[in-house]
Length: 376
Image (cartoon, rainbow, N blue to C red; front, side):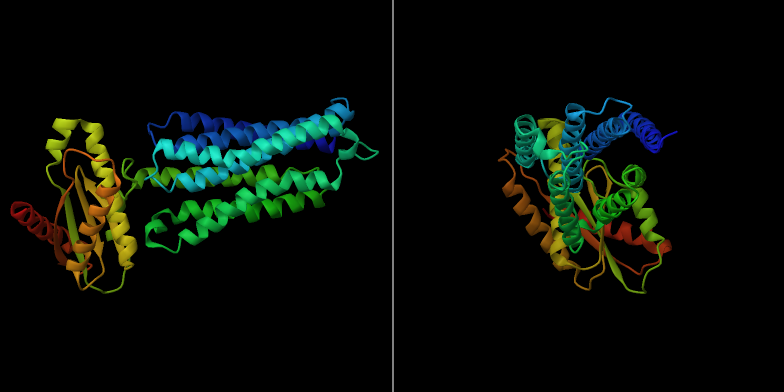
């Protein structure tokens, strides 16, 4: 077997793995946009591995090696690679920004596609008009081609890495730390894998190995998130709350804060469940914004229905409640004008950090929340 035959076989194995993964993703009972983005990301990796395998067959002369076939396979690689990198960036950006609407996402995607379209057109014209410029006497691409091949993908990958690392510094995005770090690791991995592949004279598909491994790792991370994340608001759910309560922590008093959306049943009955879902998303965004602004150690989850739960390490719980109300007003003002109000009642109680006493603290916080609701 030739070295390029081994190259093709490894690519084929990775393609089979990703096809099985794609089948698994399609069967997931979730409407989350990030799974649609991840599915697209996996699909484009498969397309690239196919194109890369054809490139290997041309280099091995299994497919006749001439000016047309060499330019064709290198052209498709130079177009598909930026698309792969673009989808990596979109997955990192959108999967951790649940507040974006589909219309905003599509507008964002259109802007980011422009460099790919420009490269698509310019390369097609230049390959057609001046094919000899791109190939040497042995029908091998010149060094400038490899610069074009890697430049735009590196821009997308580096942008995703930098934006991810910057966002992990804020409270708002610490819940998504794993997703950002996975995507951030893609870029240095690509550089190392690509460099190693060049050292092995382009005959070992190290890049294929790395991409498949990181995709599988990202999928496992997303599955774990699916178990511990509320699919509507993207907040922690009660499974994650249970894990949090039993984590080792410093002996420091905290406050349990219960948040309940006022007149939520009336919103559902009058305007429909879709409008009720939008109200819950607005409240969840306000809670996340409050956590970010306060900057102290907090845990936030959707406890169930229209109830949310916060655990804050603070000595002034009234400040937390005040900030949540301010953020809720801001989020409501940003949303489309509606004929109903979105308000919330809140109550809090001290918790000593012991899992055994948490239920009692939550009951006390719940009582104060209903007192607040009666006074509203």
